[in-house]
Image 1 (cartoon, rainbow, N blue to C red):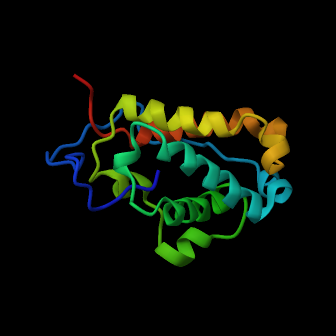
Image 2 (cartoon, rainbow, N blue to C red):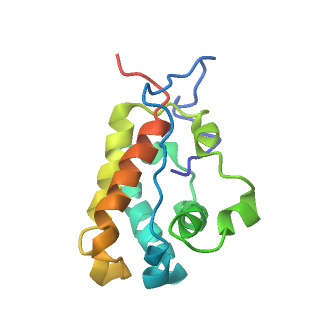
Length: 157
């Protein structure tokens, strides 16, 4: 998730002790680099562009920057490396440290589910649209579920 840093909707975290998911950070989840080999950088960028178009229509849209096109490119740079490509994100922005980058924003389980559902929606027919290797789709969705769980920093009441 690439979030905006100047949100005006009250979603900025104000408490000093964010919620920490009890399962901790994802462990030993490695995505097969064959994903990048089959998709290529262009298809990964297109996939993230489509994902951000879904986020644009979602209830969590206010969490994201005004310029969703730029946000999708930044996120795509992260996913290129994650899926086996060059470290574009690291070269442009430094170490990912995604939980730390998301801590300023109130992300609860409901927001996580909206984010996941937007991703799952664009993964329908991913083989045709993005050349996503179908044999790796399950492990990718599993990764997204674990990764997004670690971004949750606000416990629901």
